[in-house]
Image (cartoon, rainbow, N blue to C red; front, side, top):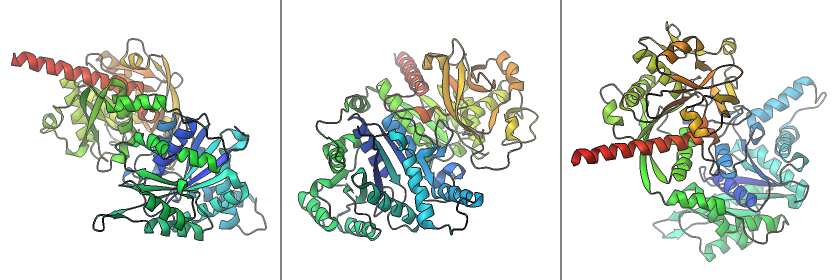
Length: 547
Ligand code: GLN
């Protein structure tokens, strides 16, 4: 395509949670499936430098990129849809924008001048948007603006959009996502909220080029015409976005509505033919025609907000489809598990995943659950804190180190089997200081990890301060636990396994971040496969008993 990168801005109106991230990712998928290179960026209007310091209850999962950026969970959707890696440049917050400007002010870059929202903050926003398009590295940069039009904190972003549209002309485009609610009492879809939302955008000098209307019912031509007329867009640029069975249906729904054609036409890019979604649709087919079902328990302490474990839940969808099964996730609160009820809560499961987390809340429930699945030979995957809990459980119940713990929960334990990394000890700042991003790991022969990955050297993403304490390594190894994945440089333990168990794997890294529609994660595939196998063994033995 042309050297000039094209910029597409996606704003949201009327209410939050309309699914801007999914619409942006779906549009990106359609453009990619037409042969264009695309990236997506999220601009978040809050003041935190990044979401790394946020409680998951506030903002859902914190997604981590290869380069160690702690980012909004929408970046997970971008990667899962596009199978293209994102980086720090793909998620910028107001905090970071101000920090960059203030750092420059202190250096004296603006010497003699007053530093203001316009032009300095808006220029920094524009710089962060254009950074991704530099040297024409992408044909399209889609920038999703967090929040809802009308929020005070979104104003500088909308001003930056206005300026970029003015500067770039046909090479910038604005898509506004709104809600067309259905009033049951009137039996009608209502366009007024959309009209008001567009009016607010117009007050800021931004005329949307395309409107994507979220709706529970199909938009009639009459409604489309009304929206078009009141909002100054052509009727073909009023796109219906009807509620979908799964987020993975949205690219097809957007293709049916010709969102990609509307964008390309507006930006003067050839739009003949259709997006080639054949590999995407292979996945959809597998997703929708499972031949079996497995039940997997997801044990965590933030389960009231399922978005806290977004990438894990999506990785199971990918791995389920790959195995031709539907994965039923049973969300279990770690604080609710006790020695007395653990069998009742877990015995029906085909597999158990113990989730990542921070702090001591719910930790004993996780340890109880791991003891149960270890003894009952139920397939287990422990991620980060989940792996650390597996180490603690083994130390206490197999090695007989009764007070074994992680120093995160107990500074004074005499058996710190999980301990803070040496270089972490002097760190006092909380933000962005964990072991973050991609690190290499070498896999041992004859391990479940190697059987899943089918390659000896892998890279996985990290987000933690604590590690397996290598002082205890030989004691664990002499007593049945294998360290099957180790960082080749630092020798830090990345993967643990129990060869005596059908499928027991703990990983210090976060495999869930790298699972995509096109490349479901090997460990999740292996885990679901093991869960299926264990279910079948159980079903067979039940049959035998009946007989
Ligand atoms: N709290 C643990 C640590 O910091 C685990 C972190 C996690 O599960 N992401 O090491």
